[in-house]
Length: 168
Image 1: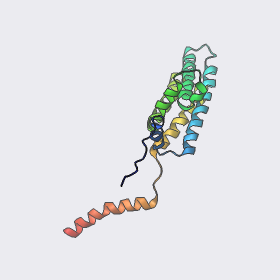
Image 2: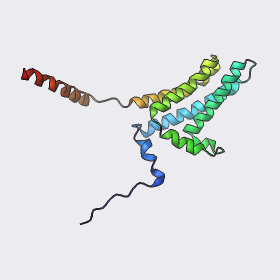
Image 3: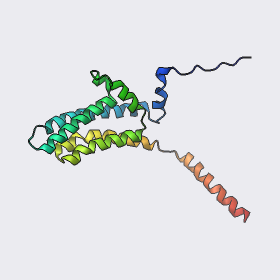
Image 4: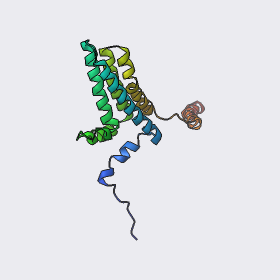
């Protein structure tokens, strides 16, 4: 009697399961991508606006904001960067990162221009990019547990204590 073994996964789909087991639903992943694209657009527009000045710190913050926009587009929407050859490679590597790593990276890169030049333009321009990091941070926290699972966990913790009391 022979057993039927499942086919090994194809080489092209090797990264697909890794991206799927981060606990995010399809609509939340889509929301994070959309926030990344909108964050990139807001960083690019506000960065361009910040560069129209004579203050060198505002110009530097505007350049960093435009670089942030490029990074957000590369990571979240590589189809927007078809002229860059390595865009799909960068997007695949970023998809393999855990949500807390993306949250730390996106929030950090959104805060840098604000610390460089604290103006309303840099603050509002990086707000959506920072919100993208917050969304990934919330995904890293995971889903809220249900009351039944919590009660079972508490019951299991109490059980050894009751056995110790009965034994003495």
